[in-house]
Length: 309
Length: 249
Ligand SMILES: Cc1cc2nc3c(=O)[nH]c(=O)nc-3n(C[C@H](O)[C@H](O)[C@H](O)COP(=O)(O)OP(=O)(O)OC[C@H]3O[C@@H](n4cnc5c(N)ncnc54)[C@H](O)[C@@H]3O)c2cc1C
Ligand SMILES: Cc1cc2nc3c(=O)[nH]c(=O)nc-3n(C[C@H](O)[C@H](O)[C@H](O)COP(=O)(O)OP(=O)(O)OC[C@H]3O[C@@H](n4cnc5c(N)ncnc54)[C@H](O)[C@@H]3O)c2cc1C
Image (tube, helix red, strand yellow):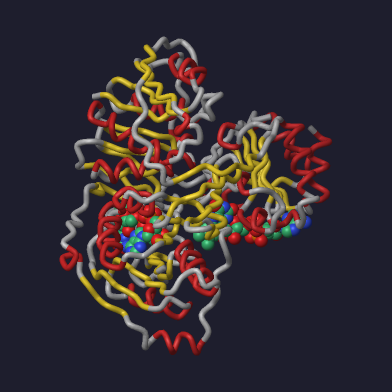
């Protein structure tokens, strides 16, 4: 049994989500190889080779992989799949974009967002916004799956010394082209990797008011999250959305400010270790899952909390 | 250009799913069902393209039980021109849905297929990408803007780091994210008109597609419940609890 993990990276840096995926892949019970498909991505391959438990890194370095277009990367993975029993990617927007394309070309079902590996063919995955957990057994000979970062501890980033093999690029179908990106630049920790998250909801009222969330986050060394309503209202950009259709997070501490606690939001954060809710409505459903609830006006409570730290 | 819009009948997003006592699945008896919210966004986008003169015909298609006709009627009332139901009471996995949709695409030859990025019941987030793979078409997933540019499209996608734009040749697949548009409500006259629009009912066998599942569901359980917490009265108490009880700051 050998599993191939698709590395998450931006050509310069290996992203931490890869480490959780390596752990999930190793729980399948065999060797773990990592595929780095990128452009000028030698440093990423070097980092992948240092991950504990990885025996081989495949580096496909080609201009056509520079932006990880699914149309280009899926055929590469399909061409390698003959050597592997399982193909694993983190449940990131990139993994979600590429892997179903691979599964369909291999004529196997994909198992999405695996939270737990029961055995080499049996997995637990959330359905209905995490309100139910399904244990599914795959009858396909090859397993193709995305794995939820919060379900698996990160493999050690150092200590390994995998062999790096350079492989040729697959044919480029030429039907898609990268035009540009508007990526949020921030010195704050990444949402899915942060130990503490401060999230704001519709209760913030305006994008200007979000500065009190950001200021509290900076005091705590935290990442900034948001509800869908806050993103829809334009208070903050989409990459901050936590929930069923946004990011799934499980920090040590999640502070929900002016967020009511809709099931779609809870789906993204209810596995946090400690949840704090600040809301002026004592009936807000968020209080049902919060470890510590404070019924208060957020415009007073948040600056006060920052001062008290 | 024709646009094909697959729409799925799912549990209403306001309803909290309950697991059946025998752990075989989620209890859907007497539960309010609606069109998957992402698919409403897909229908709306198709209508806007037609209103802009960029498409001539919108075909809604659903795979599901007889009641999925209601979902298709909703799409027709919003503005789709005709509908196809591939009727089945079986659980149809995304790969099988994609194979059926490919057969519909082969028959209808649309220039664009707009799907939801995920169905809110099974949360798979696969079908559009799988259909794209089976057809060898490019895909613009998690779309927040779809523009027809020349003889292709440009799709702005919601990605983990922010937004990304890709240019795709046509025909292509698009999957919708939440902020692509705000779907319209069907007006009463349009609901009446929709009753007269064409709705063909087919079976998987008509398309010669094998839909047998590849995954066996061994059990479906409720996740562990969080133990209820407490209310604190002051910021001082909160900080004290976080420091000394929870030890997280
Ligand atoms: C298909 C679909 C997918 C979705 N996906 C997501 C998702 O991924 N993530 C997500 O978050 N949502 C998602 N939603 C939306 C979700 O249903 C809710 O609408 C949303 O989470 C509500 O956001 P909110 O709690 O910020 O706003 P509201 O529900 O409006 O709550 C605002 C809260 O702020 C409080 N408040 C107001 N003013 C103050 C004040 N001065 N001080 C203190 N408290 C105050 C109010 O008491 C209220 O509880 C989705 C919905 C659908 C249909
Ligand atoms: C334990 C379990 C029990 C289940 N029980 C049932 C059940 O009783 N009844 C039931 O209907 N489903 C049931 N399902 C769900 C069924 O398996 C899913 O329909 C299938 O797996 C597709 O996944 P998805 O809808 O999440 O696909 P996604 O890939 O998330 O869907 C994306 C998009 O594809 C399109 N699409 C997907 N499916 C269809 C469709 N059928 N018709 C038209 N367009 C579609 C839509 O545009 C949708 O937005 C069950 C699943 C599990 C795990």
